[in-house]
Image 1 (tube, rainbow, N blue to C red):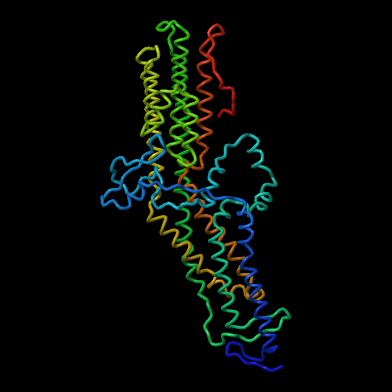
Image 2 (image 1 turned 180 degrees about the vertical axis):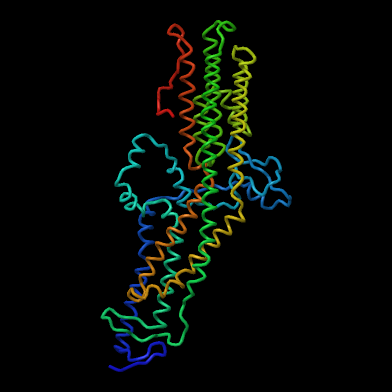
Length: 461
C-alpha cells in the first residue's frame, strides 16, 4: 500500500493498486448506469404494451411543398377520403387537416388521447372522493399517460445527471464499497458544476410562464366543452320546439307529421356527428362516420352529407329545410331558426379553437426556458447531494423533479387542443337518442312514433 496525494484533497488517500482501482472503477460506473436506468426501464416496460399507429401522408402534401405560392392551400377530403386542393387562405397552415410535415408514426401521447375521453357517472364521482385515492394514484404513477409520454425526456435528464456524477467523481475521487476513498483519475480537471443562485432567481419567472401556459390551455378546453354543452342544449331545443309546435290543424295527417319530425330529428343529429368528424383525425373517424351516416340517414341525404366539402354546414342546411317543412306559424319557425343560428356560432367557435393555437412564440419560449433550466439543474444540485454515496442520490432526485416539471408543460400541451380528448362521439350518440325520443311524446297510442331499429339505448346526459 502507498499514499497518493491530490491537489483537491489534502492528506493521505489510500490506493488498492491498479487492479483494485480498475475493479472499483468498473463497479462504480455500473452502479451509476444502473441508477441512470432506474426510471426509464420501468416506463419502457409499461410502454412496450402499446403499439404505434401509422399516418398515411397524401400525395398532395408532397406537391404542396413544391408550390411557390405565398399563401398555402387548404385541403378538404372528397368521397374517397383523399385530399384535394381547395382555396387560398391568409394563414400559415390549415389546422383542420394533417400537417405535411407530420410524423408517419404517432407517439404514445397521441395514441392515448382517445382513452382520455372520460364521461363521469355518479359511481365515478364516488370513486374520485375515495379516501384511499391518493395511494391508488401514487401506485399507478408509472402507468400514467403523462409519464409514458415523457420517457425520452426523463431518460435524457437521467443521462445528464449520471454524466455529471461520473465526471465529478473522476475529478474528485470516490468512495468504494468498503468506505475507502480512492484517488481522482482526472486530477486537475475542473468540476462540472454551476452556482445555484441563477436557478433560484429565475425560478419565479419560470413558474409564472408555466402558470400562464397551463391556464391558457385549460381555458381553451373549458371553452370547447362549453360550446359542446351549448350544442347539446340547442339540438334538444330544436327538436322540442318542432315536436311541440307541429300543428295538427295545419297538417291533420299524423303520419306526415311523424315523417317530418323524423326528418328533423335525424338532421339535428347529423350536425354534432358531422362536427365530431370535422374536428377529428380522418384516420380514426372517417370510415365510422360514413358507416353511421348511411345507417341513420336516408340514402340521398347520407351521400350528400358525405360528399359535402364542409359537412357541419351541410347538416345545418338540412336542419333548416327540415324545420321549414314543419306545419307551424312563421313566428315559431323563426324561434327554431334562432337556435340554428347558435349552432352556427358554436361551430365557428370550435373551428376557431381548433385552428388557432396558443401563440407559438409564447409556447416555444416557455418550452425552451423550462428544458434549459431543468437540463442544467444537475450541475447546480451536485454539491447539495454530498451526503449521499458519491452523490448518486442526485440521479433519482433529478428524475422526479424532471417528471413534475416536464409534466406541467405536457399537461398544457395535452389540453391546448381539446377536441381529441373530449368525448364528442358520446355527445353525438346522446343527442341522437334524445332527439329520437322527443317526437314520441307528441303522439298518442293510436299514432305512435316508431324508432325503427334504434333499440341500443345508452346513458343519456
